[in-house]
Image (tube, rainbow, N blue to C red):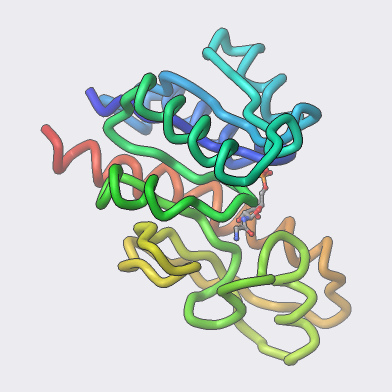
Length: 197
Ligand code: GAR
């Protein structure tokens, strides 16, 4: 059994995709043991509660310094001790100490085909705004391992999605989620669970 912790910041549709894949039996030998949000108002926390999954908020705003937050975040992860940490729309820069302690055990979903539209400042809708501004005809999503850089770790899976005439960032974001993110994130977790078996 691969015991995973899922880190979230917002709506949590990727978290829901993982939950649904486990429930439907598509994703086997995986258990979500904890959900961590940096945002107390994240709807993802509700999704976890609805499923009876242990969920907690660790907000940088409740700490005096960034170092204090980083330490609390690392302590929580050490306490949970997951086999894999899944960043599912987690919009916090992962502290170097965390990537060091959990080396090779953190994955992230990014809403573009890396190396396009990634790195510092590219998150959420901003990624789709940039893709539309550049006029690309194909975009997509990437699941990758997390290293000390931003979106620089080894790629596990990618899926392409068409950009259509008249797309707004919101419409494109939804299509990338439906046609790529919600598929390749559970599949990547499944691959890692199989390797562990
Ligand atoms: C997703 O589109 C995810 O790929 C993106 O945030 C969104 C979260 O949605 N992540 C990043 O941009 C990371 N750089 P969700 O909360 O509904 O899963």
